[in-house]
Length: 504
Image (cartoon, rainbow, N blue to C red):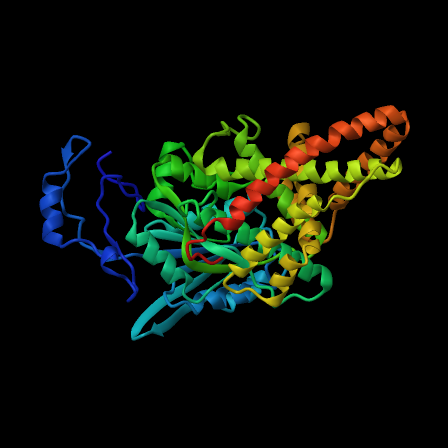
């Protein structure tokens, strides 16, 4: 193959990209061109001498793609946030699929050429709107369509149709990517705009999701900023990294259709291709929350099931399973921690009811230590939020809201594992879409299962003799002590670890 295909670059091509930002320091600038020429004239690549014909530094180019599905309530705000950036993308493609609301009409009001002058420098972008109609591949199909539209650019900025960006997010992402060409994908720090939603349930769920996102972001920031998943909400991808993934895995497009967490799958593939996947330390984006239990259940079960699917081989499509992959270490920790949470909470509830039934419960203040440590950990995390508010502080300090949200998350976890172990062929994309439309009742199943477990346990307990009941309690409480001590130690370790100046 003597010539590259249109839009594709050979791995041996030398590309030196500069950010369009006055904030770029010396580390973001390349060495002098004559020095590069001298180096490249003696550099051996694949047994051939690499020529310095493509070493001239130039500004990086960014194509932004926005996959949209029924985003009439948010697409205008998303486009306004992009057009108000301190560094505009060079082109913006709004890619609409399977939509039956007014998203196309609203997006088309932004079509055309836009200019913006920032500190004397003029930026130009063009907004294009593509309505794919019925698309069986849903979001994945829209993302891959956007990739083919973006060939020839250096970076792809993926933004969800309900995600708004801080005004300097694109500039900060580009600065970090051009500064370190080893990065194949860079995720923004995600949070949720809490100011647009009313109602007690919505505010409670938003506070829980903000705390959940903050914990996830902080864990990744403190692990060398290595990002387990380059979320589709707002991530900047190197086109070269995507093309390497396609060649390495014999794919026609970067995002695969046989995974329910296409962003996690692509993150693993980028890592396997020799690139790093990172989270930005400063770029921020605000995603759309789930404001009711039905929609939250659909989203979280899909995320949990997709993560589990990456652990095991052959469960979906041609996934080989990579349980020891570096990007999945945090996922393993999350699953193991959630299993401990379920065991300890359910165990305490059952033992408490059992002890009370035979008047054998004696209160010990030591049981107040784990919830107190958990509250302190949640409070410290809330204080680390960049846009923290009184509701975030109260959510953590009162302890009860965080405990209720933990029980909700435990239900999502059990539902996902049940679906996985039952090997049911369920379309979780469709389930989430229906849940967001107010359809389906799967979100009540965890509560039904909990009540069934409690009812069965109480009935079985009542059939035992007093001596058997006493033996169960004498064995059950020590086991729970040990498990709770282990959990408390891990929480205290996280409570006292240094945040190194990071804010989430």
